[in-house]
Length: 297
Image (cartoon, rainbow, N blue to C red; front, side, top):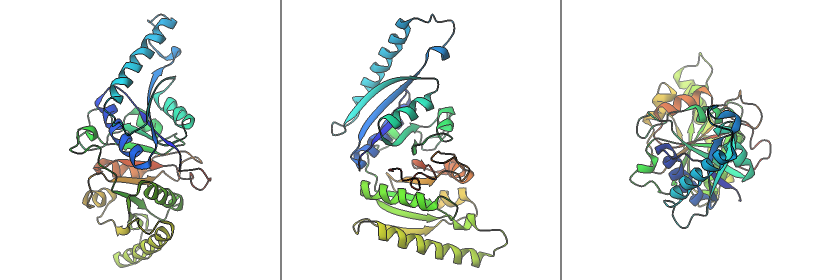
């Protein structure tokens, strides 16, 4: 399957984290890697600076220098490209680049000030997670400084519930696991989707039935050599469940966007937002109707 990985790059620790995760994803998916720096357009920069073409060329040159330095850290087996783009917003510039380069994923790092190994959403991530037409991968703080920052993606965990969009998310997870050669772990969120009033036994039975159905669907779609398992997330809350799940080094988690999202666009729902608070691995957020609309993952 074709497609590329687009990294929203800044010359910061968060930018290095995004490059590290983007490199791992590009290698596993055998995809080209595009590092994109988005600079403000003329009308959005400081009014005290003279509107001269020389200024634009200056910041373009600075951006190219940052990109050249960043690309020296990318292994030689990865086909990489650097781009300086101008846009009214960083997120809009990344989405435009993602569409231009037929991106499978847009990768960004965490906002500054977060805990090592955890996620913290800044303004760019928030805008992307409410408007992107392309899945967004979030790199936790410190990804580039990990003991094995270029580890292969050995397993993909996907959080599956019963709300609208679950089928599309499972299709995306199956495609990603197949292309990356990764094992697939299906984590049932049915206990958190269950209607109020059910007792513990009823919730467990619903979860077990749902998990079995999803497992059968995934096994039928996956190549025989791709391992797939299903687990029920333990805990009294989404945060508690995610915090107590065992995680492998190099693992990533896939979640769907909220049912409130517009067609083929992201909207980070409350469940995914709660997961982010405690999740120790990268998260990929998938537009809810992406697969339903026949769009290539």
